[in-house]
Length: 132
Image 1 (spheres, rainbow, N blue to C red):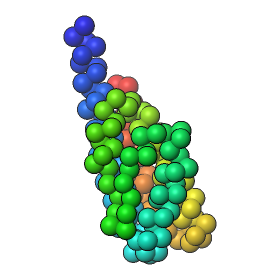
Image 2: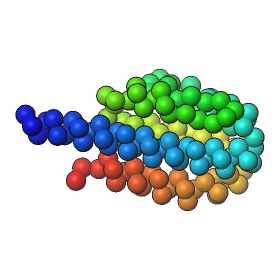
Image 3: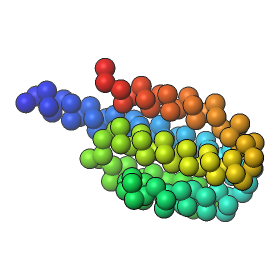
């Protein structure tokens, strides 16, 4: 029984770490991309991506998007029972979808700027969720 409790706590801790990591990554993406295309267009693209992926990853629907940025505050409360791997997959899908939209919009210029940041954070998330 204690082992189950320990694993459950580790899972929640991992979920929080993964959420924090992607929250920081989305903030970096927001700052870089909004400077290139503007807050209103970026808010529209992120909201569109969330709507598209929200059915497969319902926790993404609690992501708040406005012209001021992206907030995961509500999501952090709603994700207490979501597995870290599922959180990672959902955010990976969101980042991939946004990357595609940015590529179509700006012919790869945005993605060239984002790739180093995204790659590093995704690798870190994979390290957090991988079984030890």
